Amino acid sequence: MPAPTRVLVPVDLSEGSRSVIDYAIQLARPFGATVHVVHAWEPPQYVAPDLLVAAPGWNSLSLEQVAVETATRDLTALINSLEKPPVALTHKVLVGEAASTILDLAEQGKYDLIIMGTHGRRGLPKLLLGSVAQKVVSRSHCPVLTLHVASEK
Image 1 (cartoon, rainbow, N blue to C red):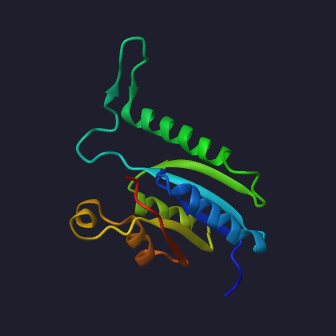
Image 2 (cartoon, one colour):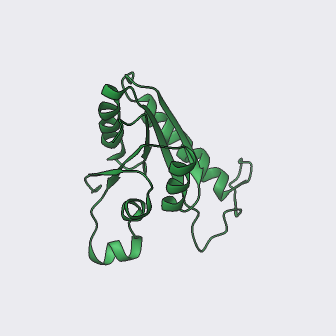
Image 3 (tube, one colour):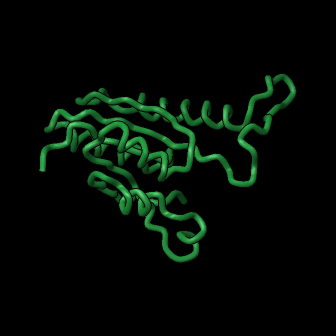
């Protein structure tokens, strides 16, 4: 198996995201691989993404615009909090169902490896929330490395 050259790192912007990015950077470093961090914002199922969000003194924006701007700001802050990475590092926010968006990006971008966190939910929480990591592992065209990240308390 050839060494990875392009590593995709999907994050959910939870507290464990930083440790997943750090791990990906350390794994990519010896190979000189590039690391691409992505967050997929999934529109709520029962609320229209073009629903306007407004408050006095605000310009009204769609829910999607507000969510993407907030996620972009949070992801940029997370990336900026890293010490200067020893590898090329990019980041972006996408809109869509998380697992499908990650899988589409991985295939279109010709990534060699996906590194992502998993919360290890079981039972009813897994049934209700699903498992993005499980869907990505079962359908990915390239290897997927999952890291257990602690749940927020």
